[in-house]
Image 1 (cartoon, rainbow, N blue to C red):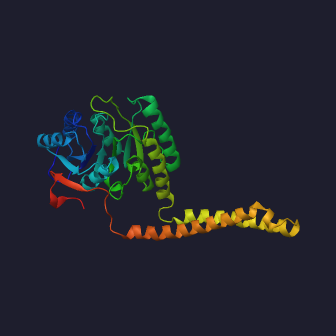
Image 2 (cartoon, rainbow, N blue to C red):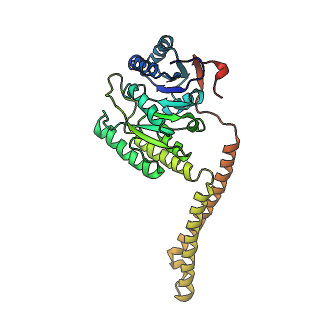
Amino acid sequence: MASVEQPYLSVLIPIYNEQESLPLLAEELAQVLDGLNLSYEVILVNDGSTDGSDSVIRELIRAHPGFKCIRVVRNVGQTAALSAGIRHCAGEIIACLDADGQNDPADIPRLIDKLAEDHDLVSGWRRQRKDPFWTRRLPSHLANALISWVTGVRLHDYGCTLKIYRSKYLKPLRLYGEMHRFLPAFAGFLGARIAELEVNHRPRLRGRSKYGLSRTLKVLLDLLTVKFMDAYMAKPIYLFGGGGLTVGLIGAGLACVTLYKKFYLGIFVKDQPLFQVSIFLGLIGFQMILLGLLAEILVRVYFDIKEKPPYFVGEMIGFDIRSEVK
């Protein structure tokens, strides 16, 4: 049931130009949530839509108690939109789903039941995915395998937005770039108990997809960041300093080989290219160690400065300002 008090369940839906899909999705979602006998709120995060979605959202808020809106003044991407919703939601558990209607709201009760089995996060798995194979399913399969291997948090479908979390594992996170797809990995780094559940995936009937093959490169680059944040965020000197020492020691070894050839084999230094290589490696190693020290300073500044979110909220509808989550 929708509640004016603090809800138990918060449903977050990032929206960008989905005016055709929203009415049916809202009807389905309201019907499912009303049948749960749980207090809930639905936060529609309008990510700078330009197609009339704003008007549709306002109608939905008037028609459905418990529906709220955060309007971001310009398109900032799905990660920042979800971050805005996470920051301002009040539920003990948080469900996320896409606005295009391909995620089935009827799966939410099953995810909640699975969460109750002593889990902290339940991730949807679109096993029977209704998307083109070459442009969507194959790249997604390869990306999921790579992410699972690098992060150690093994899931079949990182790209499925339909997931449910205990809020205590999302609230501490500060998301930037395109990091929303790595939320299970971040939660896993915090010690969350993660489960996976097959969910229904429906073909898109209205609108068009906002994603293409170009996101594959973004996944690879973001994965490097995720791995760094997991293993070296608190102590970057271990990465840069360790690499610098390794390179420097190789350079020193090559210098020793050069001296051996000079004094024992009579080969002049100018005739040995290894000497130039050793100098080059020594300089690189020194620079990497300096970079590690600078990174250590920046990490300390990062943990000390006041946090600033990567979005600017232009309007909030249906929120009680006194109960806004800080």
